[in-house]
Length: 291
Image (cartoon, rainbow, N blue to C red; front, side, top):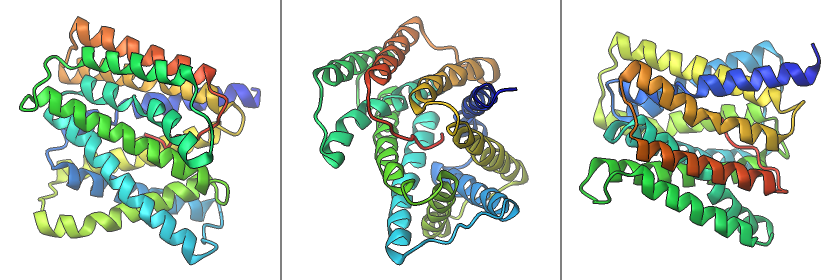
C-alpha cells in the first residue's frame, strides 16, 4: 500500500474516533473540570508510554519553551472545559457545530500574529458561518440552555484557534506528539487545584470512560492524525476533519437519541460549507490540535 493511501486511511480512522469525543460529555457523570483532568491525565500517560517506547527525545531545549507550552496548557484546559460544558448544557449537535467555527477564528488570528493580510473572502466566510450559527441555535435567550451551549461552543472554537496558532509556533521546534504530550501534562497539572476544590467522586464507571476517552479517543487517535500529516497535505487533512461533527451528530442520534432538527442540520451544512470553502481558498498551513 502506498504511503499516501495508508495516511488517508489513518486520518479517516482518527477523525472517525474524534467523532466519539463529544458523547463522553453526556456519558460521564462528572463536571467538565473533572472530565478535563481525567482525559488529559490518561492522555499524558499514554503519550509518555508511546514516547518512551519509540525512544523519542522529548526533553525541552529551554525553560522558555517549557513556560510557553505550560502557558498553552491554560488555553488547552479552557478549550476542553468549554467544549464539554457546551455538550452538557445543550446537546452534541450544537456543541460540535459551534465549535467547528474555529477555522474562521484562525483566518482572523493568523494575520495578527504572523503579519498577514485579511482577505475579503475570509470576511464573507465568517459572515456565512455566523448565519449558520444563528440557524443552529433554536432560540437566542441568555437564559436558554441551547444559547448558553452555543456560546460555550464558540468559546471552545476560539480557544482552539489560539491553540492552532500556538501549535504552529511550537512544531517549528518540536514534533507534534511532544507538543501534545506537554499540553496534556500542563492541563492535567493546572486542573489539580480545581479538582482538590470540587472533590469529585471518580466512580469505576467514570474512570473507565475517562481512560477510554484519554487513551483511545485522544492519544491514539491524535497520534494517527499527526502521523498522517507526514504524507498528505494539511489542507486536505483540514477538510477531512470537517467530518468530525458529522460523525458526532450521527453517533449522538444512535447512542443518545439526540436527533437534531432540520433547522440545525441546515445551519450545520452552511457552517461546514463555509469552512470547507475557506480551507480550499486558504494558502496558509496551520496544524490544528487534535480533537
